[in-house]
Image (cartoon, rainbow, N blue to C red; front, side, top):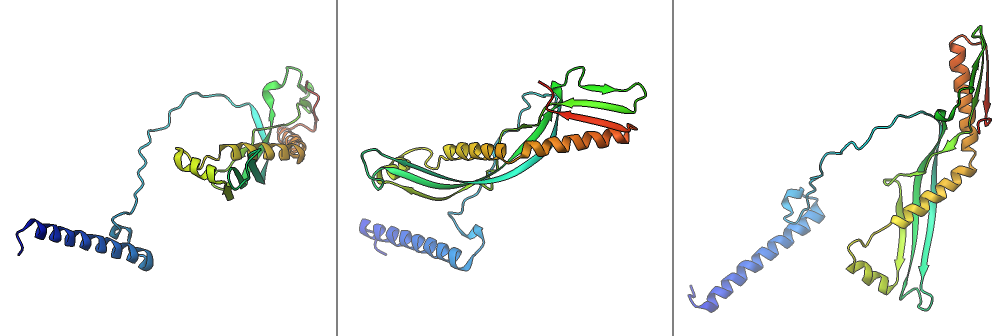
Length: 219
């Protein structure tokens, strides 16, 4: 054996080279042979260290969910610089947003004269407000970016920022477009019909022979 410092360096170099080769072989085998993850020294593990959810408040619900609609929208968002070409500064993203909107009738707005019942309890008249649309709810699992093109300065900025994949604006735009689509879809009218049918059937089961439901008369 060579006891000189040069010999020690050579031995350490040989050991280091052997470690590098071993790791490379394991990584290649992991990718090509689909070996178990425990053989990969660089395999990632995920641990959820989040604390428990805290109840902040409880509220009473006084509305009837009468209908719901599922929507999908494609957002094509492009941002350009006024004086620079898009290859230098600019972004364009195609984003698929999937979400739902519920239509409901708020029974808390009924006044004392909204329900009128005859003395023989055979006839009932109910005055209801029109159904309202809830806020659009986007499904994060079904919403995704299809493609993204970025200029040179945008790519550099994303690399230096702490959140290069911020898609908040895309989610906001998708939710607004779904909300607008729900308002044009006839979902509220469908909810009005469902609410009227529910009340007629329910009161009919209670023995009422004549049930009149007036929708939209409450102001």
